[in-house]
Image 1 (cartoon, rainbow, N blue to C red):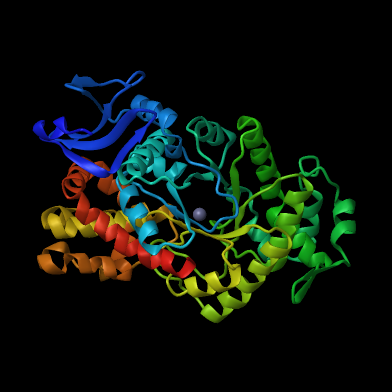
Image 2 (image 1 turned 135 degrees about the horizontal axis):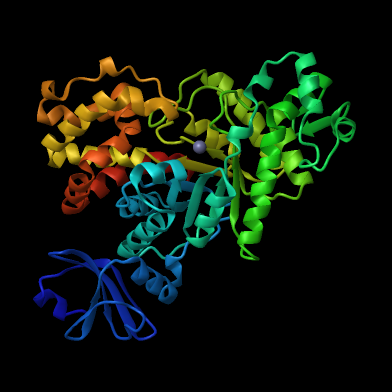
Length: 478
Ligand SMILES: [Zn+2]
């Protein structure tokens, strides 16, 4: 197959070569970049004939034609399988992610397309582009096992529609804007007023009926019991009532938009200011279930701090005690997976999470892959890395606004002071990681083309950095 390509000066990606129904397909690298090559029936593809093969550019239309021919290039719902979200802001990381999943073995299903609307806005990509980039990576590596596509942190029904159209299979509903964080500490009188004013119609409920369901009844969760008194119930209801109503609206919209096709639903309240107590967890899921919502994973806001791209900050013993309860609730009232958002680089909590979830885990990572891309850049183009670091130092105070980070930019060394061989070490420091992490939008705006071209020209260095980093993330959960 494809013998004539060598004469054209191509390098074939051997893992990609596949023959199906008498037609052969592969990914190849030409002097102009990557191309899809087809030998046999190329109807429906747009490309140029070269001898006995057709060379097709990696366009959206050719991606669509290819997924119609090779069904494993479409993402699938993953249900309760242990899963790992591999967000890829640059659209070049999927081969590295797949290599790590393969190297670790075990039974972890990867989510290879995963972007929030915020990340799409900052990277100038559409949900469809994210999906297509993942497809080409899946094709390149010859991955034929199920993989998922997460439309992350959806906040409006318009977000849902765009991602359904692009073929996403995993939908993360984020009702965080509707969480009343003040209710976390409000006094009983204030809570009573807020409770009366909840959107009872949208909740298909009444204040009296809710009190009758919860007050005085004990929830037995494996080896502990949770009891709602008036303050606890009102606090949970006021804090999460509107978020629950919004989630129900989003979930019903999604179900209708997906017609009867199966999909995975995740509910996330992780990006809120106050932690979700085990009792509030019980309240949220009981109410969602009452209104007919079904989900495969839930991301409470855990105690401590899950900052971007760095290890857990907080009291590990307290985290363990609380996490054990959340995991038990997810088994008894589900089962569903507990989801760890901003989950990258939290090496100190992985053993705890793995132990208590008993494989009902979803690990979600996003920006850490961008940092590994920068590690590759530091090795192959120190000048470019210096410019990106310099920009990060300038932009950090402004760009950090919508992220949970606490780096002190004064602790990051000026790029001119760092010798080439120590540049990558910045990526092993707390402040350097966070500063580079949250300024990715600025870096892409300024250096996007050069960054992508450098990574494409040095893709093996990029994949190696990613593989090494993700093996560390996946091994605790296999
Ligand atoms: Zn999140």
